Image (cartoon, rainbow, N blue to C red; front, side, top):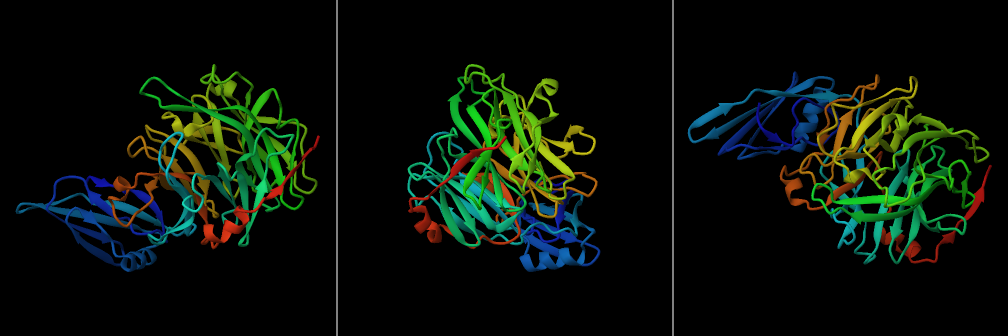
Length: 457
């Protein structure tokens, strides 16, 4: 088999994905690749890289939907040509959402020079900036989120001297001041209710400490955390004692597709950072009534940390309600700094769970999100070099079986060597975000709307 980067051997791809450009990893003076399907083929010349013409690639995918392409690599060293064994790429008829939103940020700890939110057209290689902190020097922006992959219903946080939550609805940006006298912090980790009327948030006191051993770099932990739900119409945060208990830490909310269940992670309160490696979160749920904005009176523990001896973070349910995927690590909830972190699949019917072996690696797998059609999932992984977070896309069939993941294609196969920023919180959206930082500046510079709080029991 040819040694190539990225590894596209035997992957499953959507019919509308950009060309799978790659480079040959061994010595070569000339390179030739033949990409062939039942209906048509492409020949590509190069020295060490295969860069496939976009129009020819699109036509080849469309003509061979539901079939596989065979890719054969030929290389020349001196006067000797070598033909490598062909590898296959299967084309699924289920298209992926056309855009992917992520934050690009240097993989540092306390300081940064530049960061921003960007959107990438997955059918080509176009990347567009949404907002960059060059407009707001010294500011951090994070936790972007969309309602059901809708680019017209978006929110993200600003941190630093301009601390606020930006709510962007149909191009109109509103600045929210989400800290109240009753809550412990501004809103942090978000998840939209499918109705678009609510956004679930955690409120957290987050700290970080550094390890003295080289095998580990940093620990990020909560000293306090609760769950709240923001009611957009009435501009208020609502909560319940069951999800904002002083005796436990609650974080990472996620609504079910029908909007009647709120999933979250919970751990018994423990002193931090003294016992940072003893805290373990369970996967829990509570009922939610979207009409009255009230919560159930019983918490259901779905995956118990007492039984697993490990810690759950980032529960995410597919839009069709059939698959829940979460991250499992040895302890804590900030799994991006845990090399052992893997993705697990939870069966909502049988309440059993298992590791997704085909997409896990020897390095970190952490944040993940679903496409609107439930057939594609994108996740963050550090498998390339152990330092930078890169986005990988995987296919999920109707029975919940995952396919081998592939690295987000780039125009130049050397892109990931030169890009010295991590891809943070990849999120699929069905179209382009039309608002940008400059149109938001007036709202960002305003005093903002103060939210209120109501405890509902």
